[in-house]
Length: 359
Image 1: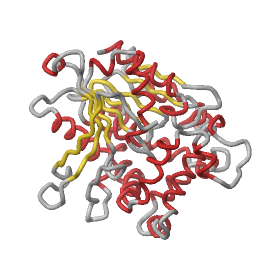
Image 2: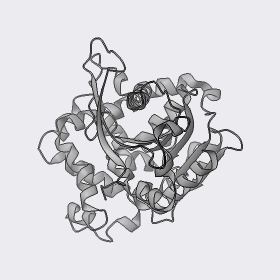
Image 3: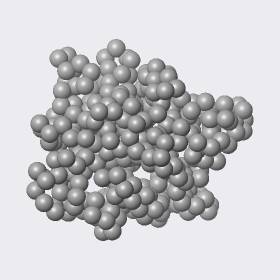
């Protein structure tokens, strides 16, 4: 499913580069935007904007099932301004990389600035508060932004991640003889120094799209996997995922810009993002706004061999305000990484109830 409720319309916004506006080309950010239908915008100026952020290897279409469910079963779409962007370097959004090789332009801090600038460009002069709902890489952007801009971010939902430092600590021989290192090998491959990954992924027109499909298959839960691989990866995936959605995720990597953008995302995650996270210190890890953390059993099981992964609930309760943090596993053992797709109804219900409670 790639469609969205009828209130959503596509918008492309040109923004000064977050890192070097005078020397780097402007960024072009694409988003689907919904404005409240129940009353004029002015009546909603005090309400926060909901921003849904996707992860790798997807784009904004990840959120289609969740937003359809919210539209059909709640008043969220009618009451709130909603933005569903493609992150820079994904889908139709483009941003120049850091010319000095630092990857800073694609750090979660700088991408978070892009997301806030996008909201401000859509509602100029309003400076609205925002509620961030993120999955995978989008959750990392959201978590960073919630720590950096406590004055603007009034709600945070992270889906199927552990903090980035914890993710790298999970990649240990002590954790089932490098089980996580091997199952999350894309962190190493995509984050490796230039030009190894791009030489491989761009060596043939279909290789990058195949790699995206391979990762979707690898990270999906058992309910979304074939009992026995036939060798036809595309056919297997299309029998389990909506073909149009699957195509929107994989075919974007036929564009060199998307390949390079996703590499910058992961290279930032393996370098400057860690510097930013370490600088927070223990006190800076906790956000002040209401926090909803959701995860799959697959992620829970992957961390059982190291202290950083033994208790997902404790991990996120330690990073949210007491009494205003909900941390919950979603789905059964058949649900994998892609909660907004594999457990769309439960994920949407959790998000909808959380929004209704606070806003």
